[in-house]
Structure formats: structure tokens, C-alpha cells
Image 1 (cartoon, rainbow, N blue to C red):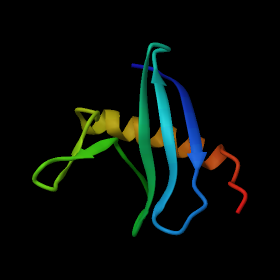
Image 2: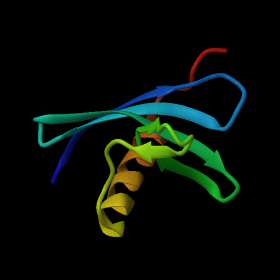
Image 3: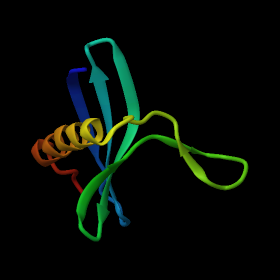
Length: 88
């Protein structure tokens, strides 16, 4: 799996969410609505999710193992760091 494109849209509002990201995999498949969140230990990514009938949030798409999640998070956060800041 190769992440061939990362598009970052930084958010300039209050709260913990810093950006919404879309990634393209192998120039063939896109995943939208990956969120960059400011946590107690720094930035991390949250995969796209949907609220279920029991009130819990469930990921719609997500990596199946830790190595893939780490690789994805590293690429997304690098793109976030390079993205221009939003005008407030």
C-alpha cells in the first residue's frame, strides 16, 4: 500500500480538532474525513467514523494493524506540519 496523496484542510476554530485530511491510496482509492486531533500527548489521527444507534462511534475505515496505523499517522502529521496555516 502506498499513500500517493495527502490533502490537509486546517481548521481555525476552538476545540481539539486541528484539521481534516483526505488520503489517496495507490492513486486508486480515497479516504476522506481523517481528523487531526490535539491530545494530551500531542497530535494524533482519528479515522472517519459514524455514530451508531447505541450512541457509540464506530470507524468506517481503519488500518488493521499497528504498523499500518503508525505509517499512516506519520505521513498525515508530516503533511499537516507542511500545510499552510488557516487565516483567522
